Length: 266
Image 1 (cartoon, rainbow, N blue to C red):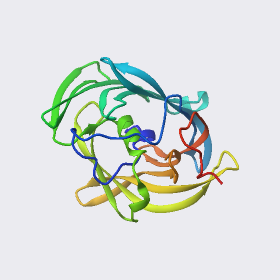
Image 2: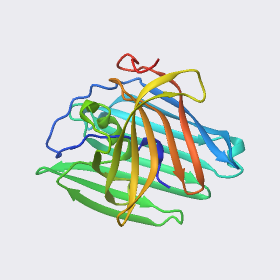
Image 3: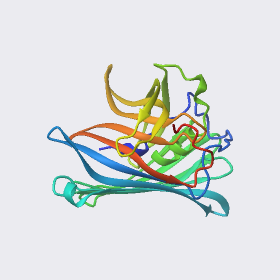
Image 4: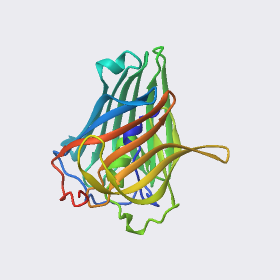
């Protein structure tokens, strides 16, 4: 199962590894928190929580950001399906390019580990990937591309600074991504704008609506729908998920350390 919380949104053209990029959406010290709900026998029950934090760090002497995402199922939910994910990504502050990514996850009875090291040369991204499967077998893979290869967290960080004012409903957005076991071209579709009320609070937000889709031949399957604040922060406040074992939703429950005022909140 893909880690759905951070397959967020991106720009029409993400560009080559040689291009520079300016962060306008976040700063060190930002923390986002979420409540997770599963649909169990037609009833929505709270089944866990997630948190994502951004902090300043160093990468080989360069100023960088470290992003960490933790997802945890509740004790009650663990009786049916264990969910324990820890993801870390490091991007340099000067160009917002990914340098390192790691993910450890336990979903059900399966434990997996992934690591990716990114390098840049001659206008290309090279991703050296290590994947340890639930049986402890290690697989190494090295892939290059003329476009930037992102991991799940670094694409979210970069995407948050793009100008969505030019997006039109139905517009497809593509980017290259690796989760540690191979790179692939991913697709999102911009659905439009909506004012959304939260389930777990009285708050409402003006949002951009995007769908992450997969293709089987020409057949399109919607995996996740994202509701992202229509302001300078571009914070995801709700996610609707179609999972292998049912449906789920994530609602933002708290935030602190935002770079910009939360003007999308009503």
